[in-house]
Image 1 (cartoon, helix red, strand yellow):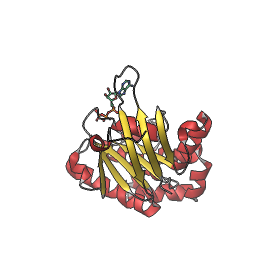
Image 2 (image 1 turned 30 degrees about the vertical axis):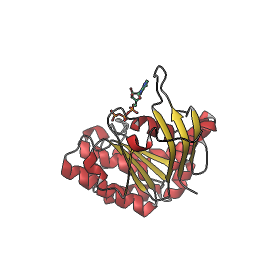
Image 3 (image 1 turned 120 degrees about the vertical axis):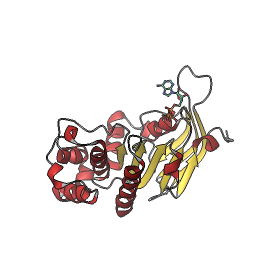
Image 4 (image 1 turned 90 degrees about the horizontal axis):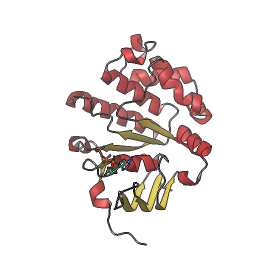
Length: 228
Ligand SMILES: Nc1ncnc2c1ncn2[C@@H]1O[C@H](COP(=O)(O)OP(=O)(O)OP(=O)(O)O)[C@@H](O)[C@H]1O
């Protein structure tokens, strides 16, 4: 079973005369690191929102770990997301009034499964922050006191805790210089590999693509012949 399976998927934003996305086939296997590239406006964020169950396809099928998110009720969908997905967005979405430690711990509050998989939660937080190279002196600090690069590491640790099967990253490196960006990707890959997580990484930056074993250009799969 693929981790993500997508078949004849269509999505159109309201008011648009054409489908934003029309993807005949896309499968992502466990542990794969997939980079999705595409010009601005090609539908990358729309695709991630469909994968996360935030948007519902107009037609076609989309399954994650064999389950169809858009057929679930909202509570079940939220639970699925908390249990199985780690997300890293451009703005990181860290909670400013919480410390580094508390931010990383959050998914274990929302998901008993993630908590159970993390085991010794405080130990897991420390291991992740150490592996991601975040100095121990920062762990009790509010995240607002951290640099952008440091906040990014906190966001990665939070996405990884409790070993979710699927990691979704939307332009998480856009604020970084080249060296910091490459270091960030190395850390992300190393940790994802340890956990066997699948990565779906979206960006319009072509330099990042060279770090990924599999690259899908959205413009080449989007609108390709669909079997009705
Ligand atoms: N909320 C919305 N309402 C209507 N149309 C939208 C909405 N969000 C996106 N779109 C349209 O869908 C298309 C794809 O947008 P999307 O944000 O998915 O592209 P993207 O590839 O992520 O772009 P970028 O690289 O600039 O972030 C665009 O034409 C955009 O105008």
